[in-house]
Image (cartoon, rainbow, N blue to C red; front, side, top):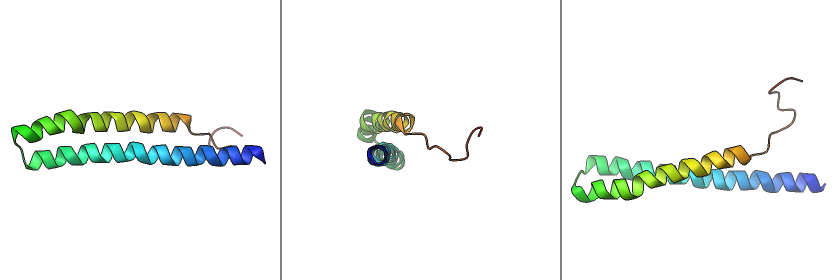
Length: 80
């Protein structure tokens, strides 16, 4: 019973942080896309100072979340 509760919390943690990581990547890419269509020195600085770090930070958060995700037993992957 306790193991099932712990797995539920792990799954909830993975979903929450995975969405946060994807959200950061999306915000960073959207900012860079908007900056591309309205190119001024200010939007270049905004894209470089905020857009790129958002994408990189989001990728790191998502990657660490995926690595921490529990592996499902009996999912059909791997040898039986």
